[in-house]
Length: 394
Image 1 (cartoon, rainbow, N blue to C red):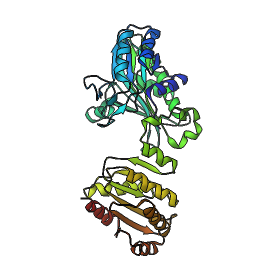
Image 2 (cartoon, rainbow, N blue to C red):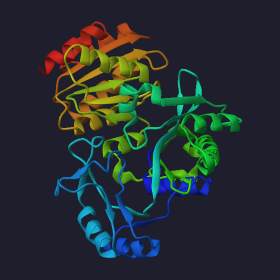
Image 3 (cartoon, one colour):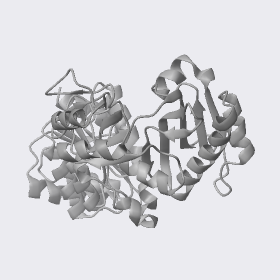
Image 4 (cartoon, rainbow, N blue to C red):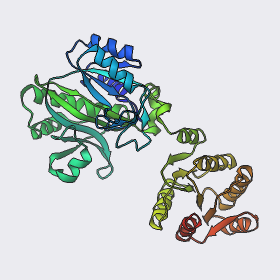
């Protein structure tokens, strides 16, 4: 689950991680008042959407205007808030459709000496959490990794004991920090890693992490995501969920216990199993198609879930065909075919439908499909099904 920057900073501050003073504004009048309350000569007005690159992003209605601006008066804060709120911000992460800005964060200006990067993530190779730091704060970490990998430092830490003091100091020394900045960096890195563990985060990224002229370290920007499977332990975090920022079809799928992610292609996928779904998408791409979604109905899907899965897929106007890929284990092939045929009748599927079946009771299931009288193409195996599905909408 993603949350907004201002929400991440609220949680970080409660955990003892240093953040700038900021005030949330939902109207130009609130932004104007926030500037006065902060009491700094310079403030920053930040668009709040679930996407990075807001400072480099541009509004559809005013392409010359960025999503993050410096202001030097209460009137400037109000004027910028007026043009931002209710308008669509396009960044490198939103795609051309962009996201509508409904909330702003007005934040104090800082005297910045340096910008660095810090993030905690789960590293699959070391099978545990790691903290990543870099001297290249403010830049896309992917760009730094591609062109200056030597500037990225990674330190694995124990998920029970957290980041040790000596590890934090090692990173701070490697970044060339001294004096107050060195001392504050040790504290910041340890508190960030503790926050990451305590809240079951999948990522806690601070970019940039600024070093002020006084040697303070503050999270100038914060991007935090949480492991959905652990949210039952964090009702306070769940309360931050902003459904307006999420894809409506993905929200609907969650209600039915379906794992669904909308993509940009035109070939819908309905699969039982996350790994199998990924393989299905890979083969569609390999044979010249573009998957319209990731959809895992799970191992125990019933008729209602399969029906809803088809409904969600077909609600996407870009979908021109559907590939169903089922490996019957816990879910027997004849059971899924029964659900599939019932869903077919309920919805009235009008696009080409290719079905590949393998596993328990596969022969019975194939016979049921063949005798159904419906326009369903059978795939002999996954490669054959992917080729037929791609060809059906070519």
